[in-house]
Image 1: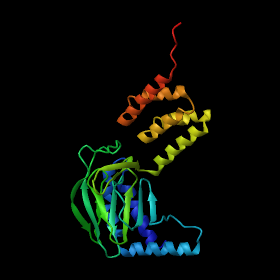
Image 2: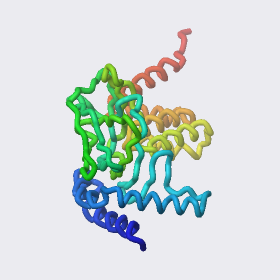
Image 3: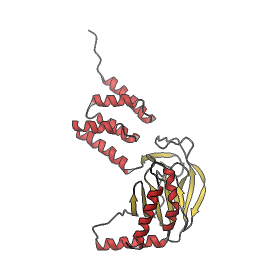
Image 4: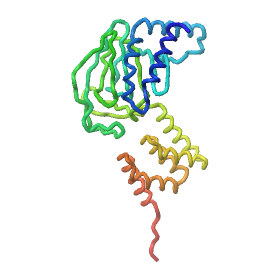
Length: 280
């Protein structure tokens, strides 16, 4: 095992001793281990190794995306080298616990915002607005730690910036987007790819319309993530009106206010559609 792989393996072993997935704040116990890797030498060696592998096997691209090289994935976390190329159109919340270390000699600047006191990640509210809270920067050799339920860091990208990034899996269910001018919330997206995949699966099962999909959709209708629950209920209605009505009656007491409201409206529509007997 070469030195780079040995360093990554040692880091992973430390993380898996320190980080308890069910206790998200334990993620930061691994900060000292991350600092050991937060240098150009480690990242450069990994990029060179990945390029050599790509040249040797051009059809095997490895764990690359357009701007990210994943060095290691473990239970509930990932270590990657990421190129921040341009400022995003909106200001995004992050659903992850994360650490960032700038590379290449350039500091990583950011604008800081506070989330409004009434912010609840799972309940999107377009009336909420970010609160400006100053600016800051991280020099090479330093580490920025961020939390999904604390201040929001909006990176200022004047030129492409390379960072070593260590993130937990998505802790929040939604990623909120805020307008850069008004600072108001404009939309929310699934925070995790798995959430989108399950919602799409619900849609496909509903469209295919086979009775064998009733039980899987009933399970999705009781999923812990609200978006998945509602997708399960909606698409169950394409297969079995009776089963869907049963789930809607349960959903009027759902912990999520949007699902409660949508379930009440759906039940009212269903009741209005039942033909009444005319008197003789």
